[in-house]
Image 1 (cartoon, rainbow, N blue to C red):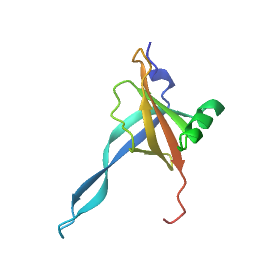
Image 2: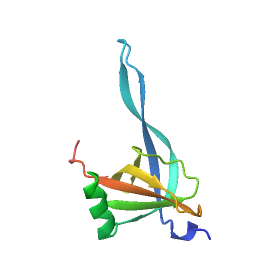
Image 3: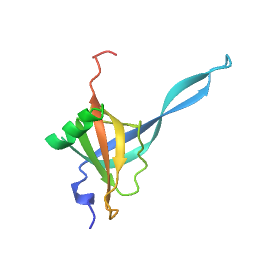
Image 4: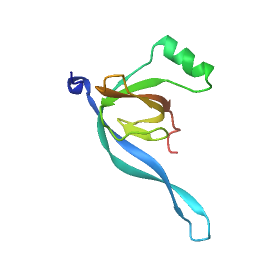
Length: 110
């Protein structure tokens, strides 16, 4: 059973990498690695409580097609929102990928 019909948004996937800074060290750089179709929901109260107990923030659940190239610490960006991925999970029968995320609210002009 495909979830494609529920994926109503396109989000950009950004991944932090490091590269030489020219002075013997490394600098962090965010790179655009692709786009994914997604459905963004708010998590159930039980999911939020479980995240809080483990010291994490879970403000949104993002559902993606199975096989999407999304990993922990990636950012999903689109429609003026940025979500930091804290964990990715698959059900026992691989039909979709679930990403537990935190909405990052940036200051205007930052």
